[in-house]
Image (cartoon, rainbow, N blue to C red; front, side, top):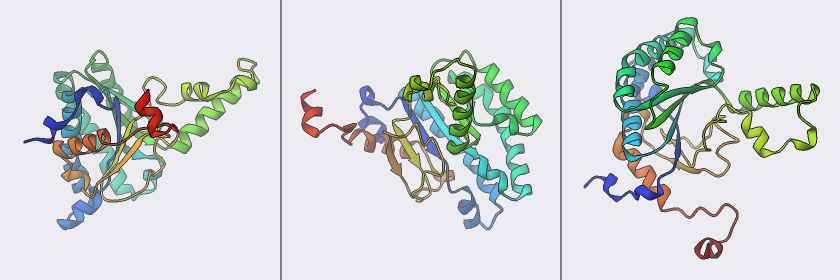
Length: 248
């Protein structure tokens, strides 16, 4: 029996975020270069996206490339950008078939011109899909995002558009990259590492964290189902007591 059959569809997380880690180590197991791991990680992206959409998850955010990743060897970065273009081009028909909208967060203007154009083309071609939003975090880091948001708010204060006393959590959230989506309720990280790695630090304040030893290229539908089941077995209190939750 699939773990999917045990999931309570009425208690799905609306937004799942995944730190896709372990491509390099997976490739090393086969004596291959790191890009071999990235190439094989594409299947895991497809499986996670399709299975999340089938269940009824509304938003899936994948940490694909951080601002820090620009510091990797140029050969790897160039190969990753080429893989990004090729993958997006190939996957658009599948996204449309599954009624999945593609979006991106991050400093995407820093991407190479070809990657930037292909990304925007895919976003445009899938913009009317409604089943699920697949959100790629590219050239993204939470500290970059927060710094950018603070600068934008500060400029509005300087122009008199915002009064300092009116700055609150909702205002800050509205200036983040994820302003048009709910905060993630479940954050998954693969590869056995227990770090957040500068990912959605504001947004995951109340998210349930799930860590698995699986390397990303080995992550399959059943692994996603297992993470969701773990999420559904947790008591989410948001600062309240267990008794308050039970009596609500």
